[in-house]
Image 1 (tube, rainbow, N blue to C red):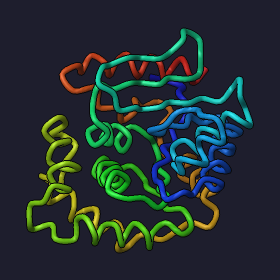
Image 2 (cartoon, one colour; image 1 turned 30 degrees about the vertical axis):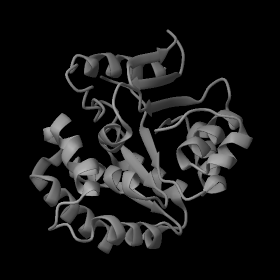
Image 3 (cartoon, rainbow, N blue to C red; image 1 turned 90 degrees about the horizontal axis):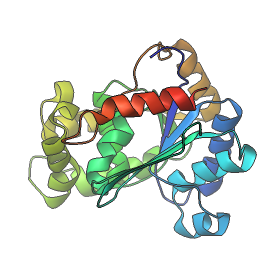
Image 4 (spheres, helix red, strand yellow; image 1 turned 60 degrees about the vertical axis):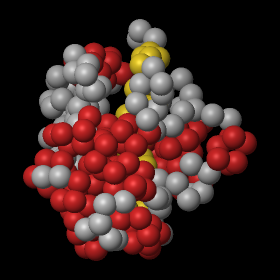
Length: 246
């Protein structure tokens, strides 16, 4: 798949709207593809919801409304590919709940930027790490993420609903997402290690640019794993990324 553009995933919550809007602008200006779990919404709605995924989409759409390249990976009850031929925006309604959709958000991008967040954000970081995707942490994110990890996954030796929902159930749909970690407990241990040794980036846009500059992403397929029970969706997704990259 020659010549595609780099895909930058943006994940997190915690009301960090302005930093995510600023990052979305940079992604659009540098003509990368922005991937999040959100949509393009009015600013008032974005500010009320407080979601990084929508904030970054807003920033990209504000600075380059006609030319920004966007991919939204959305939870839904039915599969729907919202893409116009020749367009630069794909909103894929996955037919999956959000906690399974997280596998796609973590594995697909070439580089992931994490803001502060909770269980879903932590799972996305784990799936990205298992896929050997670089994860960059924005300023002020790690204290929040580490605390949420302790709250929800710190007692990983004991099965709880958070472990089942955010790791075991996704792995039933995507067994390969555990990679070398082996299983849900291995993924959580990998996540704990990632958070313990990670550092935050003051210049997150510069850090993303540096990663993209040294990765061999251009001639590679994306990390999109396909939709569960519809792995032919992989080739459709790759073709759309190719088109969006033009």
